[in-house]
Image (cartoon, rainbow over all chains, first blue to last red):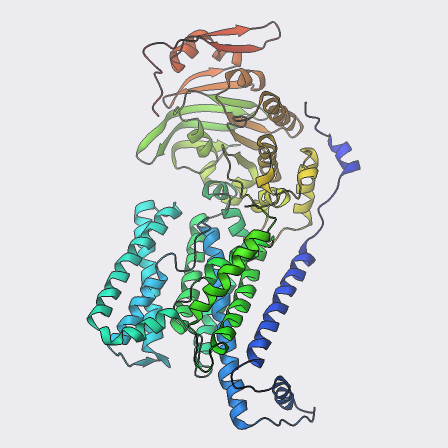
Length: 361
Length: 268
């Protein structure tokens, strides 16, 4: 029989939950350190063989009053600050956005196989990019070229279409109708893209290269293009962390707790779409990061989306920076497609984490 | 004093009307058990009481219409323990119970000292401290049910809705959970509305029974009044015997061979 303690007994032997705030801060601190080290590695290592000491010296020479003089040549300086650094920063942005978006979708759709491309972003962006390439559209708007612009617009339209279809079927209540809407839209847009490619076979290689993805840049412009979208997407998702935990109980339970589930879902889908569309527009279709990184974070024991979202972002950013480092060094001076590297490094790493993990699903 | 009042309530699920013109009231601190065959509308009624479904007619809590309250205020008063509640396998018990504090935490805020104090009290009262750090996936059936009740209590509700709280539990665990609910009902003057298939247990714990059949209120009253051979045989469509012992206990014993005409109200 149950013995339920009366309130007086409870007072005498009660324990209270400690604050866990500082533990969370410490875990995020580790993530920040990992990202900082990855970015330093990305900055220091490259086929041009500029010594890390020279880079540090050059960095120091920009700080006034230290009296440090750089011995770096103008070419080396351009390689480091105009090629490597923007590339490292873009890799971090794209990797971070894809990973946090994947984590958010896995939460909101309660589906471990969800990734940021779930609602047709990839197919829409693919069609947009293909149109830009095969029709050789050469316009720029606010300094943004046709290809990233059409990829972005295609991605956003695809998700809007998928959401419209899913909502009209499921009245916005069920996430599975949204996923099926995404499947339908992706199939349709991919068919258009395939048709265009087949009609313009001479541009096939170009389209294919875009699909494989790259974070190679010609300076800071892509970083600046991507930055505002990344900030908005990351900001919106991070503040929804606790609500994603509640949504994990199912829609009915979340609503019984006073959560506006439809609003939360729309906010998350919008943020993911904006972030992913921008990432795809500047870097092509880089797979694997958005699917696997959130699971790696879960497998090391982080379950609450409050911590999982920012940590997935930091790990995703580190992972893509390191993958890009491999992509541009192993076969230098030629480069491997980064999508190949993410899969080749990521899959065995993931299998290893899966095997050694003590946390059962 | 009337706590929950239903007036001419009809509930739709999709295109199907599941509950028809139900008028019923539940007194403060009372335990009402909703019984009835499968598909009679028991779960639908509980979901409507949690404002998860649109209704026609009116449900009022302490005189205020359920649909006129803000979501937050509603969630601070009414907690729902779902049948087969979804428990994210990797989540720790303490984090799960903390989610019950959602109606008290601002949209993008995080829990404060008050929330930790309430959750600590609930863990204490339900003797869950030993499980606090355990992942939900590692709990047995009885432990799961206690944890789900704990999350509901963290809402500090004054109305507790329980959908089949004891299915899949052995007899000992069933009594354990129901005893727990009864002591909470007494300690906190909780009003409890539960849905159940187990007529014997419903009789043992509930103050009032409401028998739903085909979406209509077929019988309402104390267990003594509702659990009669005639009423039950009519609505469950089986032949059975109701046995009363001297302490007021009621047992419902089915006869082995069912009647040929089958259950009248079963629509599933």
